[in-house]
Length: 91
Image (cartoon, rainbow, N blue to C red):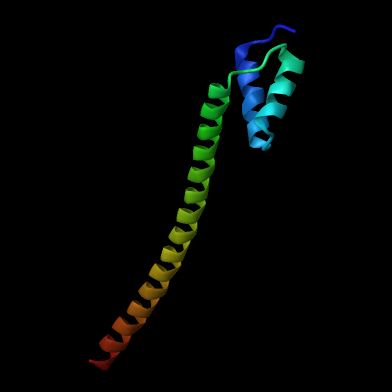
């Protein structure tokens, strides 16, 4: 039943990502490892998990904005080229 603390923390992170309650996480850890982790550790891991989720959301939003700006840039570039050609042909 003796396993490394790294395995315990990895399982804890996985269970937190699954959205399990602290109590359920502690029970699963006790069954698998013979002991749980401190609530302070759970809170710290949850905070990191929340930060990662928030950063992923922000990253997705920025990617969408970048795609929109690229689209607008190329549309503007095409219109500018057409306008420049029109002006050039008028002369």
